[in-house]
Amino acid sequence: MGAPGDFAQAYVIAHEVGHHVQNILGITAKVDGMRRRLGEREMNALSVRVELQADCFAGVWVHHSQNSKGWLERGDIEEALNAASRIGDDVLQASAGRSEVPDSFTHGSSAQRMTWFKRGLQGGSIAQCNTFESR
Image 1: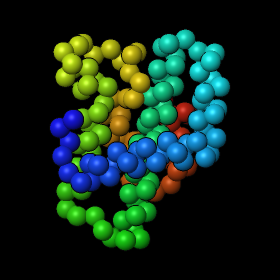
Image 2: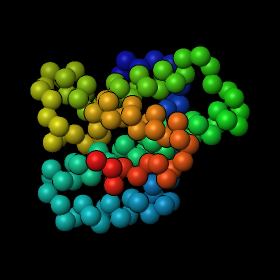
Image 3: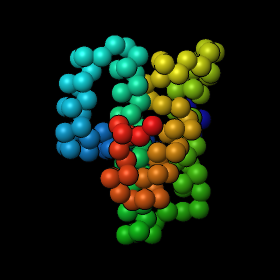
Image 4: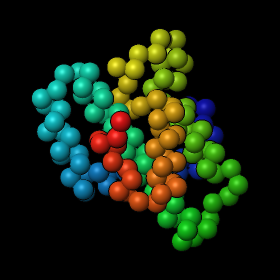
């Protein structure tokens, strides 16, 4: 996807672990229950919130991992942010030669993905990752 670097891979793995955390916290089941009552547009918007929360959770992991181990190298955060920007729905649609259609987004824009990752990174608390109540 044009996002080189070992920490880009770490970000993607941390994002997927974020989905596991959502499952453990009961967020996934709650969202799945809501999806049954929504139209496509609303389901897409809900999916974006789920994905952005997983990005935020990935940032929380980086925050605590760095504080406890001090293992990040120069450029690691930039690699993660580059990966987040490369997998935004806006970039993916543009790279496929399509017009940007925000109502069809299921993972969020590049800017949203980077913002939520940084929010988790800076704050270090999953309490700051409530994408469902954020505008």
